[in-house]
Image (cartoon, rainbow, N blue to C red; front, side, top):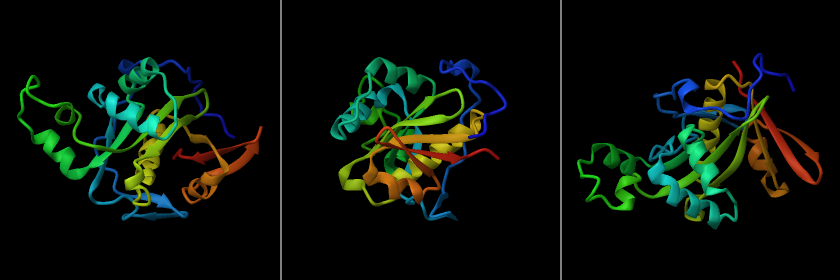
Length: 196
């Protein structure tokens, strides 16, 4: 693995982070080919906010993935957590003029979450710590959208690599999203070059 030109610390603050890209991610490389239809039109992937925390914890718990709530909050504050939502919910959330005191939890958090990815900054790569989608939303390209947003985030932060550690049943998923796979200590490790 090549090393990025800058050494990274695993502790960053949102103040020093480059701005998040504002453009919509509508395409992604799948099966080695960039396809504009890889992410469903009805889905938006956006940075998580503090109001999303409860929904994120529920998604992670349902997938039997663990994340310390305090650490999760820090990652949300650092813009290293992304959620997939229905486009209609995202638009309603932006256009809603409901006073915060009258808004329900779902109103404040922009509707139901279809998926989440939690990222961890390392010295040489941005690592996918957790990624999951609702069972009812699987097979629709939502996880692909979360991977694409993760790759964009890695590039924005100056990383050349996006990495993941996962179980053997997920091998094909990561391979079709351009990850190179290796096996160590009974686990599969994937890395994908995202540098330009």
